[in-house]
Image 1: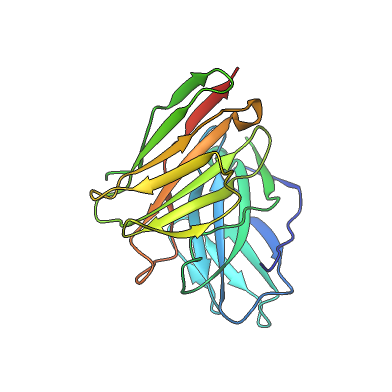
Image 2 (image 1 turned 135 degrees about the horizontal axis):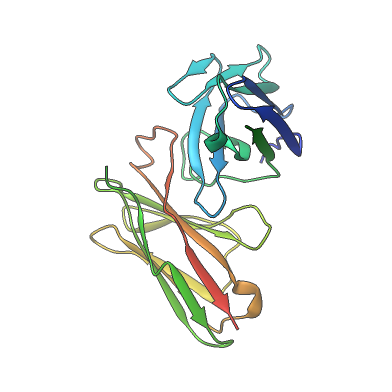
Length: 113
Length: 115
């Protein structure tokens, strides 16, 4: 499985934008980039995913580098509820392994009031 | 909206006992995944089922078994429990491998404590 690298931790202030980086230099052409987050004592929660183009949804935006070797999750206005561990995960489309997510070391996001 | 339901939410067992965790996926989701998260660890994939057949297997001990039933709910059976099995067990579901939105929906987890 292709690996991802994320900073151990990041901090932000409430209502400010947050840019969470992820490096995935060994990504293959059929790997989707997924982001999940996990709030304390809860199950992981899907945030967003993409393949090549930038993606937006109600929770966040995903900016994907042109060479796909890195991506950035953007929370436009952080709230206290966004404090969580954020995981950047590569998942190969198709086949039986699509849901076999490999959670590596994520980024612990702290949001200050 | 209906979410993934897991039961029991908390379970305490003694070493060498057996435990069964249940997972009820979101209606019309036919794929179920099981993950284990030890204390201070990241979630680890255990096993998945699609249309009642095992579709993939991760680092699941031989002492564990799982199945998916005709109503698509799944059960994870753990025997000869060890202290190291103490963890949060998450179930997730998705609408199927042939049509996949890329989103797994996770339940709130079952916390197993082995004494």
